Image (cartoon, rainbow, N blue to C red; front, side):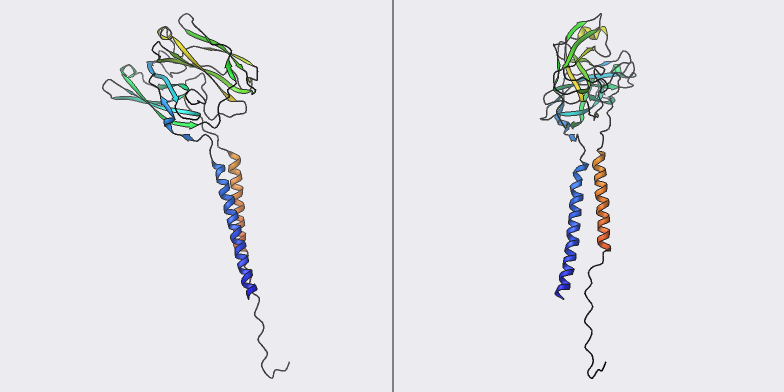
Length: 317
């Protein structure tokens, strides 16, 4: 009888151990669902008070149509880590504080280190019916994403970009050198233009100076030209200085944020979800379910039949 009980306890123990092991396997697969570039606290990005707004004279890089209200300014990374995907919301108000319209935009830097500024643009489109009535604009940070790795630091200007007025068009030209050890994919330059009060009055993002099909290897050079988008002679006359940021993505990287192109698009692409971890988790779950079903179907060890009763007295075979 003790042997029977021992067999039953051993079978139950083995089944419990199997269940625990399967549970551990399933729980260990949960981190695979972790999506990179997690949301950060919006307070890590601060809207600086150097922004301005204007009515676009014509469709262009920043304005979808003539008459749009366009806001240009800067955000600063006031956190302790690298951030990206900074999205902003703006509200246009008249002199009475009445809301005329709302819109959203993004900062134009792929990855922003602590302390660095990044320009942004917000296009109120269409706004031609009330854009001239705007007295003020309020801007708040909607969301920020933590960057998983610092940006590549091997791209440098060979010298300070040259700036000049080209027949009413403020123009900056310069050359970038890859003096690091990596080959980069997409490379572009973001330029912020200021007036003599330090207010942002315009910006520019170049076309891609390098692409994965024409990458910039170690020791390579790329030349850029930057002019203020939505330029007018009046705007060019206001500009007294400019700041430049070289931005890039690794050669083998798929973008997690849409990088600026030569259109007015301010949307962002969806983060790519890790497919391989999902497949691994599905396989583990299927194996676990099948194993549990087999454990349930397996018959428990039955005790041996009792011994036959003793023969009756005076029994003759």
